[in-house]
Image (cartoon, rainbow, N blue to C red; front, side, top):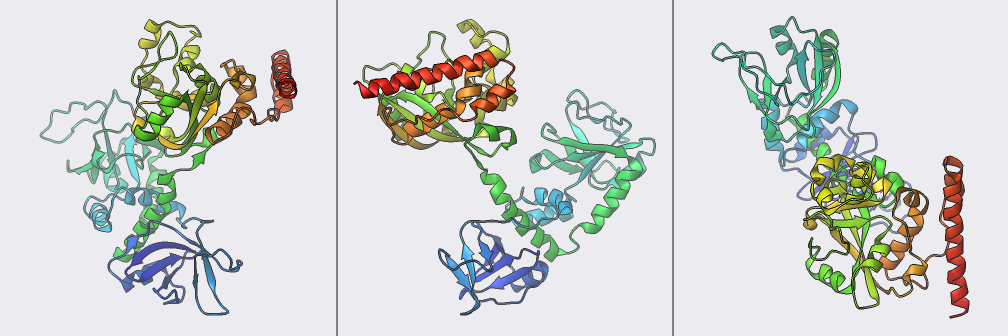
Length: 479
């Protein structure tokens, strides 16, 4: 069971079967299992909870944080969630609408007054309809000129009413508005039914295009499933906010293999190699771009750079008279990352480039390729340093760093060596030293060799790695 709302001393839980149960401040069941809607009548001041608990009915009693019921029949509450709120598939569009509002009262006004019911349609004569920024709606009211408004969109939440106004258009596009801010689509009255003018449809998506008959049938079915009264609407609002908390917080992504499935709010674990002086300043003041440059061709102005694998190399290359270096471990949400300079220039066919060439590109133009930058070279950039969360800083003697970190920063090296260098980065960022750095051979080498068409390059890379390890072991034996 999951706690979804509180009101004073009452706690409302949702069971794994989708029913509700009330618990009072003495941790005793105040009611039997009932529908969530009926239990909401116990109070007028329900608020979504900020934390969520899972109740394991037959679990061992140790390590619980709270227990409910009576002696001999306890139910134990644990901190770590193992389940999610039971949103039905047909509830998801309206739940996505609900989480745009901070209070139920605001959501209720939008639902009843503006008829923002979660699902939206656009009637068209194009079976391959797409949202085109060069096209837009025409104002067809009797007092208007009929001119087009490029880059905008007209939609409806009342398909039957709208469909009767356009009998000659045979198709309907369903428009997903879940990522569009509520301020970007407002109800208007041109006399053609319940219409919304979307001032910025850049985040709207076409879900599907179907015949008008199919869409009308789908719309009627959805209308029958929507909340029929205030209590049902309030129940959906509370469940939607509880369900959304995990999505808003995002997952922690610390393996490059998981980048493809990462969502915009997921946190990517990366590293930054630098001098001790810079690292201490970062600990106190955070990251500040453009304070130092280690290369003849400078990076893009206004950005700070991070790596999944190569922070030890960048630390060693950082200019300093001291032999110590530092690696900063950070987490950054995917939505705040940009592709790195080298990746973009390689992709543009310029592996060797000039200052003028790098200055001529705008990372904003390539932001959609951030995942590919991470998967190909393991590197990414951040424009707003306030979005960087420092997790740890490791200081170490770098005089022998070359013995464990001497990469060629190219895609083939990252393909083979990313796990090794990532483990080394983590080791150094969390207090490890070069001398006790991980010695195991990089994982998956045989699998990479089988899959790769360039067996010879992989053979040489593996031999070079083994040779490096042998040199390191020999030096350790004969210091």
